Amino acid sequence: MLCFLSTALTTTLLKIVPSASSTCTASTASSVMEFKHEPGTFSVAYVTAPNDTTAKKIARGLVENKLAACVNVIPQITSIYSWENKIEEDSEVLMMIKTRTSVVDELTKFVRENHPYKVCEVITLPIQGGNLPYLKWIDDEVKGKIEKC
Picture (cartoon, rainbow, N blue to C red):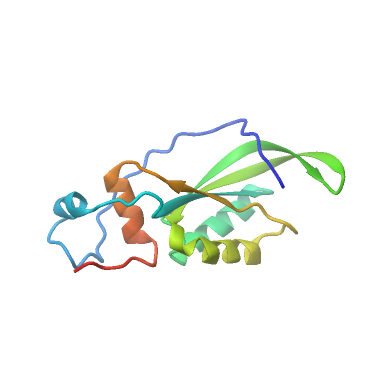
């Protein structure tokens, strides 16, 4: 089991962009008003990587493959962990990934296939609530959406 201690967290401002793929509602505003969030439908995944280049490659692949709506790449974390009976301390990069819970297994498979670590960290937590327009945006961007037309 690996753990991490963040030494620098950044705040990211996100701009909600209306999805062009919505065919069920006439407007984004009414679409958001009709959107009902069920707790646990979405998740945040945390993945560490050895460097910025690796993290950005994995992040871009997740978004391009519709496995994530957004990946924040947070630089300069320090991870202290036990590995092969030794206490290790490494500089790493943390990815904070917003996704649909139903694609977590596929997301994990993608990370494992594209990550240099023998045992890479992929842990997820369910999103219980949040800004409805943002959650709707995740719903629109990540594959696996069930249309209710």
